[in-house]
Length: 110
Image (cartoon, rainbow, N blue to C red; front, side, top):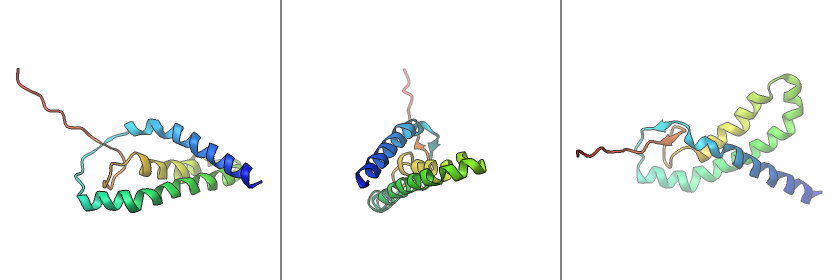
């Protein structure tokens, strides 16, 4: 029984990771975080946000029949899965807002 649940959970997480991989091209962020902010984000916050995404996915799956009957399955998925996944995988290291950091391109005079 435990093996079946763990396989289902792994398959769900893998499907979520594949589904949210396209979110990496969201919007540009103009921030310049410090080294301390980047370190704290990498060591403390990202693992906690990953755990939140996994737990939120499990809670969403359990509550899906009830939220579908209530008509808010999309909203529940946005709050429980998509929001934490964006904060985990799309936010630049040390930034406070979700989104990709824009790359600066300089023009050269010919």
